[in-house]
Length: 223
Image (cartoon, rainbow, N blue to C red):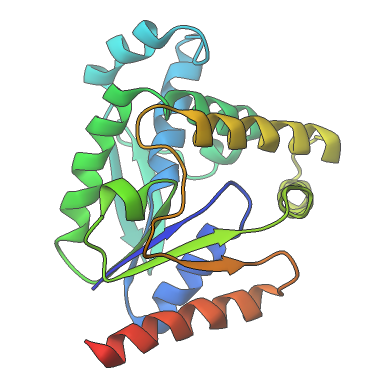
């Protein structure tokens, strides 16, 4: 079974998808982490990810992004280096959003994402999974939440990791990413016509996880 979970930054996609996959015995694939890895590579090379599209494209032949699961936990490797923690830094989040609008980047990573989905039962989250990457997914869910709620969650998450930032900076970055993700010409962020909408604004994490798991189990019972 293929489960596609889409939605804007900070809606809880990764947390919910990871927990749901564990409960259901599926493999969890965080596609956003792949774009973060590309953004990190370009950032390390000093390429302006917002204004130098050609510079990012020139780097693509050098970039190798792979995913492995250790004790059920996804680890992301960039050219053989485990970058699972570094890709979560705020500046890399912005770089990821910038490179994600580049068609050549998306085409490179979508091929890998589709190949992963053919091997086992998967829950894959991102911005365009149900609309572009896995349009044939048996279950499609669109997670959303109020932008300030999302920013508050991300700010707390970063604070727990010791990252120095402010709520307003996180909110500004999130609003920028929302505009970037929804406004891109190629495979923009949008709810698939056959996706179930889940608003997590006032849910606890456990409530959101239960809602998503129930949707998936309901579909399993029908198939």
